[in-house]
Image (cartoon, rainbow, N blue to C red; front, side, top):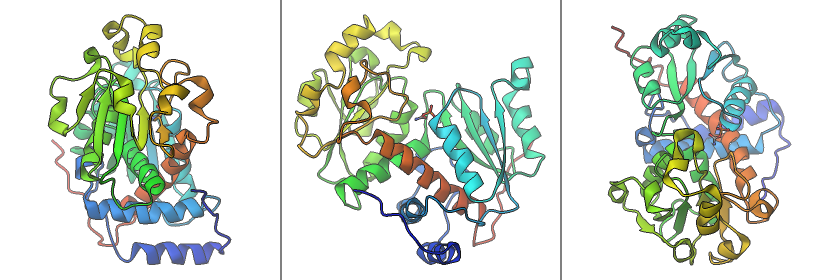
Length: 338
Ligand code: CP
């Protein structure tokens, strides 16, 4: 579905966004897990994000006077650049802290986050190799903490943008009756951790396919079904969602070789053709071409929605930052500093 860009004046666009919002607020101050997002939050975020997508060339003054620190203690391209640009397009001041910070000299994450918090910033976006860093940070800061991916745990804004991409493709308010197949390194994937929870809320049928060694033991609790043969999983799918083999988290120790993995589970043209004719191919990125997805499909194929996911990431993150910073209800975060 092509997005038609708006030609409204900036002030008319601001008025329109305020009217779409209709006096609604998010129910959370920090976003650590997708479980915090209620169906009402989801409706609000998606209504606003769809509008921001139409206004993607606009700069808004909504968050003027507020600051954000992007604390990325692990590499990132999509999440870090979109959070930074989203904040700037809402007129926020931004600063970045990376793994090349005093954490390298032995300073704890908590001391680092509290240092940033003393600038009185409104939002701190955190990416960490370890699970749980954003959850702990949220307990000790007045700023809103946004989890930009923590260890093997969760990546809630990735799930939000993926949900928007799927719903828009299906032109529906939920994914009832739709089949989503997640193929790849489920075990080490924080993207899976958030997406599977959201897909449950959206009522999708979720199939997973990977070598058994890359499947966590208790995965059935999410109501998903495992397929050892990817061809069986893909048959009749509406969405094919490929995940990277996460070598930096030790995934190579769970498969014979990457070449073998690609042969058995890589998404090729032939395999994608087993899905429905109008099925879409998604991937959170970074794509390891010819391992998780065959190169010819990765970015240019008309069924590939990988760059559309990136575009939706900007819109969703802008919606989140506007709504988190500009609370109509005037409530402030309460936190438990010790
Ligand atoms: N999807 C995702 O988190 O990508 P980055 O690591 O590039 O941010």
